Length: 242
Ligand SMILES: Nc1ncnc2c1ncn2[C@@H]1O[C@H](COP(=O)(O)OP(=O)(O)OP(=O)(O)O)[C@@H](O)[C@H]1O
Image (cartoon, rainbow, N blue to C red; front, side, top):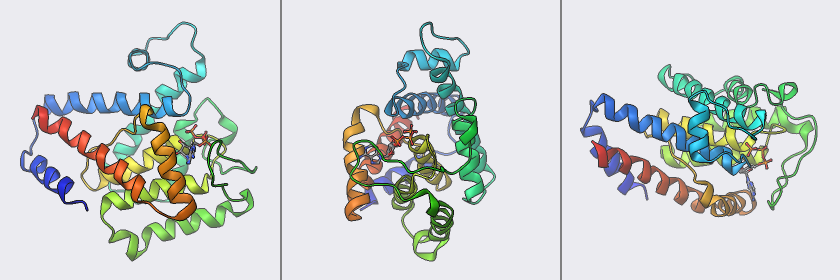
């Protein structure tokens, strides 16, 4: 099921140490694409080029402060996730709250790193997130599940997809769940030596439908397929330039 990607990853690993300038430019590209697409999925109207300009420190006329902050915060959250990977830190509720705090910094400060105190629905989704009263218990179970032998022995690609899916199913925060889930997905992939992936805004509908399948009938195969395709795209980018 994962053989193709594992072969490609081996090919990439055999080229290590990778050329530093090439790696730097690919990282910059993925960082920009990831930030642009993840924010676009949740409704940010800045284009790819505008997102790049904002990351260079320039403001875009007519765009809200919130949209600018979403870009700046997302880049900072990626840098934070890279540090977690570098320091081999474990996944904990505390780390998830830290990532979320960066995503929403200056946007919704009353709720940064704090579980929701209200019930929510995900518009367009079949699944209804659990009652807020249950969140402490469910998030603690989520971490126990993650640390279980079954999950730790899973193929890292499947584990990353399920971490995203199970987290966003709980929907612990009032806002920013999607962006945090995509950061957790890449955190998990990067911990296992994979490059980060970009879930493209133009695949949004397919992505939502795949998550709906996972949440309603427990079938993760559709979502795992999307993750696999995007890993191949990221690895191909490296292989094409190295
Ligand atoms: N059928 C679905 N439709 C839309 N989103 C879904 C669906 N199923 C799961 N999701 C997940 O929920 C996220 C959106 O949740 P919501 O609309 O509550 O936004 P949010 O919590 O503010 O997160 P963000 O703004 O970062 O996307 C999506 O990005 C996706 O990960």
